Amino acid sequence: MKKISIMVLALFMAFSPLAHAHSGRTDSNGGHNCSDKSKAKGLCSGYHYHNGGNSSGSGSSGSSSTTSSKKTTNSNTKTSEATKVKKSYSESNLTVFIENEKVQIDPKPILFNSANYLPLRVTAELLGAKVAWDQGTNTITISKDDRTFILTVDSTAAKINDESTTISSAPIIVNNVVYVSIRVIAEGLGYTAKYQSDMDSLYINK
Image (tube, helix red, strand yellow):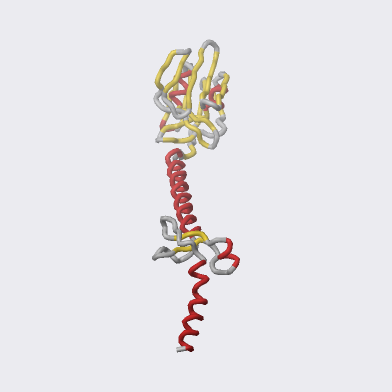
């Protein structure tokens, strides 16, 4: 009996620090953070679970999992948004003539939605117009003589001499350059545009 009593006492003393290491108060997940005293005694090192809670690791792992999930969701959202605004285009071999004189367009025209688009600033200046860009509103103002043509990137709303109008296709930005369809730039400045498909050539004339 004496030996049994000593063994029972020894077991009680061995496990009693663990019993007193915790306040018994747990959070909604069934765990809690160790007290400073418990950490000092080497009884635990951080957040842990009780009463059937998740004992696979510290509580911070659950938090990082949630954070990681949020980061993944945000990343997917950004990727999705980037895909929506991405422009699918190809370089065009279009030859351009202004008043029947061949001109060099640099950067080169592009094909977008099966239509030829010209770099707006270069084309407007070749037509003798001045171009002003408002980065805050993505608005372009083109002026020549007594004519003012105002466009907005990704919008078919426009103004000619302060009169609202709707253009056939919206200007787009590709590689930090504003492009606009042939018809829009020509008609906006009072020109006519004729496309010769067999020669892949464009003629812009008054």
